[in-house]
Length: 295
Ligand code: PEP
Ligand code: MN
Figure 1 (tube, rainbow, N blue to C red):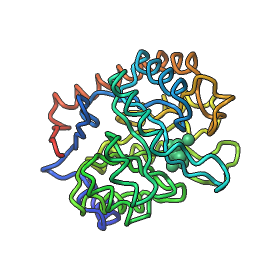
Figure 2 (cartoon, rainbow, N blue to C red; figure 1 turned 60 degrees about the vertical axis):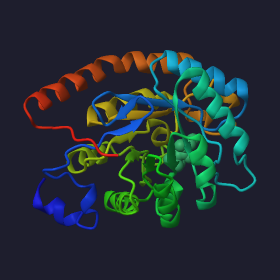
Figure 3 (cartoon, rainbow, N blue to C red; figure 1 turned 60 degrees about the horizontal axis):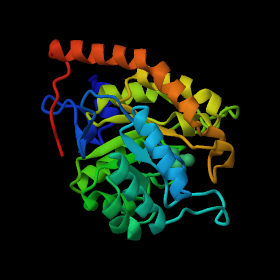
Figure 4 (spheres, rainbow, N blue to C red; figure 1 turned 90 degrees about the horizontal axis):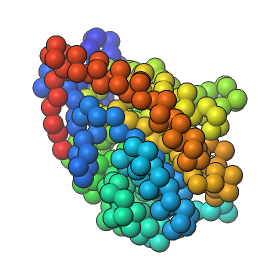
């Protein structure tokens, strides 16, 4: 890594690659995130009903997803909008894990909810709006669960690394970055997908990086293209919103894929993921990217 970057990110030394640590692998159930296999996390924006969640879980599982996403505690622009099912939603997620064998990622919004969410989830999601809530990060770190840290919508890479460093400082090495688009002057998309940010994170840090094309795009038509760009930029996996009937979704319907669209996206990603595996294999064989396990 060049010295300029080392200087620029000097506040987050433990996030940076070193001779000792080239790549962290986060283990969740039987999965290795950051370990070479491309991991797709998919599911609805919010957990709504038993039928909605179970139908989505079994469909995305068949299509190749390994992790089920779904919010039980939802950060919304309005306090009067649907806020999530809370505990009832967490219980549905746990039932979906039992039935489909998918690991669960779900958001935790407040420090006080961390023990409850950690009891049901395999990975705690820290949402974009919470990325700089350091007391939440500390509580999430202490839960011992892996943390999917979403980039704040106005956060720089420096800010993102600082938040990851906070989790590492509190004794939890299992941090996964998630690039989900940032606010720019462009208004055609919900956010601007920072593919260069993914490439940079993969070069400078040893932590896994997940791309979220759904929140970046805000429009379902764009999600497959952004997913391919995420793979090409070097992401270790995807986080994608899928719903049985997106137009009836209680949140983020415009950016959610229906089942046929998800299948088509996964099929189109196949060659890109194969190319990625081939390149990773070649680099490893050349000794460029030795794997080291943490967690
Ligand atoms: C979500 O994943 O549904 C979500 C609210 O994402 P973000 O925090 O990136 O807006
Ligand atoms: Mn959403």
